[in-house]
Image (cartoon, rainbow, N blue to C red):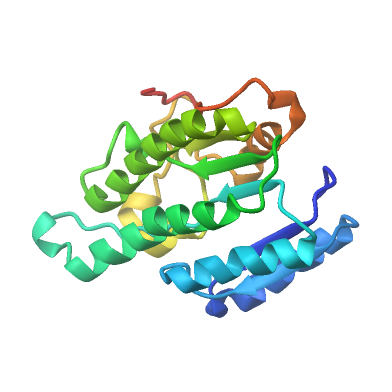
Length: 224
């Protein structure tokens, strides 16, 4: 928004208070903000999400697939089918559904940015399901970039390392997240604001010759 974009955000209904705060920040930057509550594990909602965003914004130029779900399970025997489904529906199916719907609106010069993870390359033992989905994101990004190149649509991914978000204390055992990010060369977790410039670059015309790439923001802990 601070770089000039009007923004629509999808979020769970339970996240309405957080969404309202984000809307205020977007509007404070002088841009239009659209809040679209629903559950992206549902294909029909994903289609409606895109239709509503395009309608209320007057079109689409940038798509960021960023929503994800994870829950640490130290043993495979404790990983239920319900959790496996929820992780794949949120992280992989929704990306596919939303992107497919958005293609009807994205013009030449548009950008798609997916959020992968260091987990795609260096998976943690307790994130068997989540790591698989992030590997899917990498493959989806590279395949789709080749498919859409002739249409002038660029597709890239950002692969964060240990970034301090509410997802971390909400999904990890306390003894694990207390040292979160300490094993990187920079000896700390990253902040969401430290990821933002990468997304802005990939969304902009300055990255017009960049497609099919995965950008690691990992504090020096790069397995790529």
